[in-house]
Image (cartoon, rainbow, N blue to C red; front, side, top):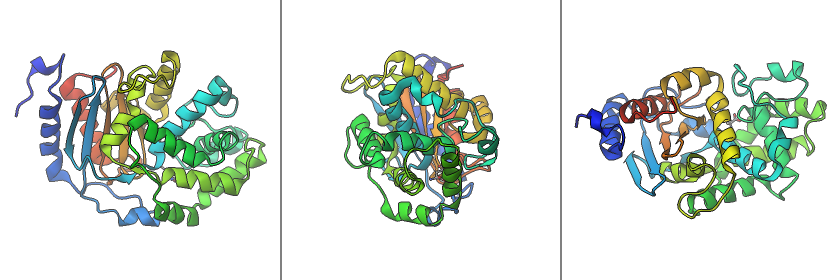
Length: 314
Ligand code: GLN
């Protein structure tokens, strides 16, 4: 079906998702699965799913929107939001909110910026957020899982302990980052406890439908649209979304904003969640990653979505 200009104000999401699927299907298999976490290297490459959850409660999907995948760094969004509900702006004493311009697992800035990570979406920043949560909850990763379940109204998101174990056994870089932060006095719990919780948090699996629903509160100015529960005030929701835009897709945040034009958070499992303020949340998953570790077809699909719907923040 051809998408016409009159879809601009009220997009026909299903027709647009069908069109995106028809464009993506011949390209399945592009990109590379993350292989530095051995268990993720076993995920079949040629997969794609997408879901749009509108604030008036409609769900549109295409492809494997019900297939569960490893959320990985997408969980950093929910960990940040949870920490922000508890500590507010105090978190910014321990980490920044500037794009890093370096890879998500880089150590270079951390040394000369004296253990204060650039932002909560690179590994260094996420480890500090885990530490903040670990000081407040018995098990920070369980708190993050419960938060995600609460936001999407489903109990199926869960840990994949095989993935967690696989990452923990090869987590040399994350240990190095955590040790450096600890040396600068910016980690209050033990390195081993923080890295273990972080790996378990990253192993959370969920599907596109659940992920889109879980992020809808950010599109809805901080309030969960389907049960009216306020998670953050509108100003805080705006701020979290702003950090997503500038830092959510690693050192490709500029390229991603240029192509997609939405606040988003990606993960090396191939998931990306994006927010259309006042309208919808979108989740896409395809395990093949581009050179910057963002899902190749996922980024393409989101760029097509904003072009076809005219709904970006620009
Ligand atoms: N668990 C992964 C890691 O720490 C998450 C990275 C990511 O998704 N960018 O390396």
